[in-house]
Image 1 (cartoon, one colour):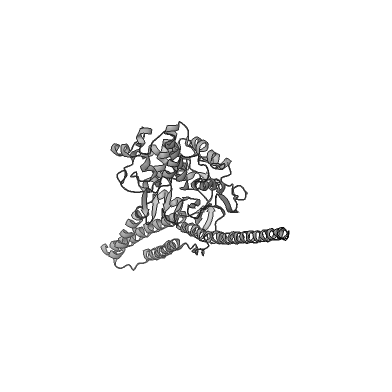
Image 2: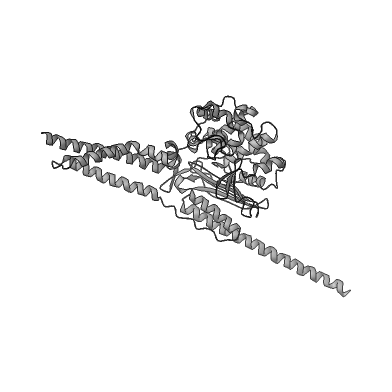
Length: 485
């Protein structure tokens, strides 16, 4: 009898222990959430980001989510349902659509593109016949980064904008043989978008909504301007010297397959759940799922490109499936770590090419926090390059004032120096932008979109170089005339 009287006490002790460990777990989770809040907010303050949304997934459940800021355009607060343009994360979703078409035996991975898009043409007729679907997905088709940027960010609102972008490639030559090397290019995924339209007899928007977004539960996702705005998307901010100014670049229908899909944090949480392989198992067959998550082409040390996704450190405990994305007024990061089952998405509505490293640090710091390590220090957002250019402009302004005074002076010496200075300045004013385009590897309109203040400062520099060159030449000519007399 005594033994039975002891059992309730044992049960009580067990309940107390369970309550204690449960409380400890909740407390630990709360500490991590508080740490994430503080860390993310420090980044938003340093980089003056007007709006952001972040979610963390663990064991197929949302572990953490939060949103900050709002939209001046609508007056609405950012929430986890607010769509942002997700930049090149769009490529992973276009890749997913292609894998579904392969899974349904509508197309094959090694099919030549021209088999499905007979009107697809390039400068060299032989090149277009060799490019395969797999080469487009792995960015090994031969299209350069420059070519991809040249057809990007066109702000088209037409529903045939994707086809028009592909047709504009008819005067383009490849910079490498198909399959020869990896060159990250938006052109590859614009062509894949057109291929989806051709083989399904639907618009890219219709196919993605019915066959990707709906099955995955991505209810706020959109691939065209009208639908995106109806679902709550608003344009973001371009950064001028670190200060957010309302974007002058609007949504581009023709860019949806490579970078202009709009989606919310909630949408991309669904995508992370799919990547984990624990949900939506009927979306792709196991064979296609494994193929989709396979690293195909090396892009750096322990880094690979797959079929629209990036993979770092494959087959190790540090393996990460991820993609980053940016448009002129947004920047995003998505990641999933199979070993620890952590995944996350960060969406922000401000961007500048020279500030993008900040979000990479934020992602790395968040991952460290989730793994119990110290977060990385996020560097301050100092517009160093802009200030250097501004300093050069001040020197040119000083020289301009000096040349004006010199031109009015009767005492002019060393006409040869003025002639050389004038010629050099005039030549530099002509070649400066082409040189910048060459070394940066981006068309001028892309530089204007992704670093607008640098583009403006460069134009001011060109104008001052031309004016100073003209004044120096006038001074030399004036000295020549005075000697001739």
